[in-house]
Image 1 (tube, protein in one colour):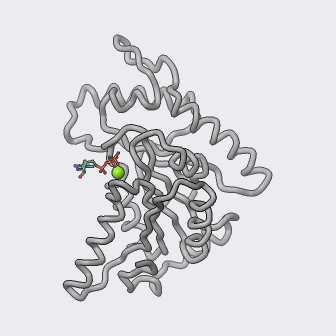
Image 2 (tube, protein in one colour):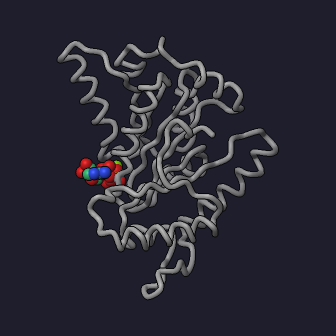
Length: 240
Ligand SMILES: Nc1ncnc2c1ncn2[C@@H]1O[C@H](COP(=O)(O)OP(=O)(O)OP(=O)(O)O)[C@@H](O)[C@H]1O
Ligand SMILES: [Mg+2]
């Protein structure tokens, strides 16, 4: 469908959003939800962030790179269907699936959507995937949801089983660290935004308090080693 099928909010964009985007150099803000582990809440969080931004009046486009599951896309289809059925208008987003395997084609789709949107939101599959890596390393804000479990934490850092200290960064954290270093250079050279990495602890309600504390300590330590890692989603600040 495209074009804010929900209709409605494009006229109501708050001016602070528009002004902020204009002072930043390179097109819409790209938020990428990625974690090579499956089932950590990427699609769920992506949908909530997209809708939250649309509710603030931002023009949001979503690109689902998980062309098999299409979870995020299905959510927006259902939302559009609800609007049709009830004849109501809700804040929504342009939603597309990319099901090819060419980086060039994906970049072309991204460039097309960039023209008329303030935010591009990418949902990626829960596995190592070349397209997911491509968009992750080009994110302005990379969001990695994880459950409060060391099984999930393992993806970003290895933790000593006795002391719970971070023994070493995992491959994924190294990948992001490298991407952030490259971006820091581009930030100076091409006036690009800095890349922000937000690790979201999802489903904390299901976890016992002791484990939560250990995860918290491990994340704080990891944050010192890879530069700042944001720890929650604050859409209103996602651009800074
Ligand atoms: N905060 C939450 N509270 C309760 N249930 C949740 C929460 N976040 C996600 N879920 C549920 O957990 C399941 C997995 O979530 P989701 O599909 O968003 O994960 P994912 O990381 O996108 O998975 P995949 O890697 O397979 O794409 C879904 O059934 C979803 O409804
Ligand atoms: Mg998913």
